[in-house]
Image (cartoon, rainbow, N blue to C red; front, top):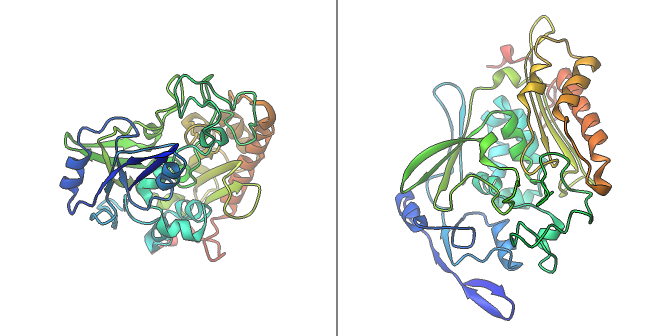
Length: 356
């Protein structure tokens, strides 16, 4: 098999290891995005190969490795296997019960058909959906470093307002990752050199002067699982709002993950906020969340938090509307979360103290 490149095909080898150790050995020595690549659902990588945006010379199929389990940790947190399907994760009873914010974000993504194929690890590794990145006829620093950014001064409706650079103004497309960022997820990876844990906040990177590098994952590393700390205190007051140009199967213009821990006295004890589709990675500022702690839910507190989270936002031509849109969506998400989490069947969640 291979990827078509102009008038010729670039051959690519394919192997399906039967053990994690064998997969890591197959990935050993890999460098760059076009060398050896793991593949599972293939919902993004195969598209990139068809369009000649990525041309790996070897594919390592990890879809049948024992990495699809969803397990409860001893402390009540959760382990999400890297090859667990997005649909299975979103509808898992424990995810729905303890992490409804994640479930809602995953069910807002893509289409049911894609969610049935896409994996958790693959979702983390999505490439940008910038129009210019996908158009090989235009310069793109992410695709060809040093060639320029066609988006700057071009069509920017879907582009970044935070964390951009003179080299790239693309945005990260994942809904799942926005919720994971708000929930303090940690990504566990491995290579023949050993294992390491990467906080989700550090997994994706801003473009800086190297926009072609999307993540801090090394080319020879394999994602094993995503771990979530206990979050039942956020279960009763969370909301994921996704503003898009059509109701289904569309990437967000702006998305918000909001979760509140509201005490019996009506005061906010803890808060989590993350923005999607506004930067090269899910956007979160703990200082904005800290403004909510000790406050009562309401317009004054919500507006202050929204302003802090969006501090430094810079419009890129025609996407100036994203700044007020993100602010209003943040405030609305906090209002919805205050009223109570609505589960996937349309019922308001009980307070976490009443959960079995």
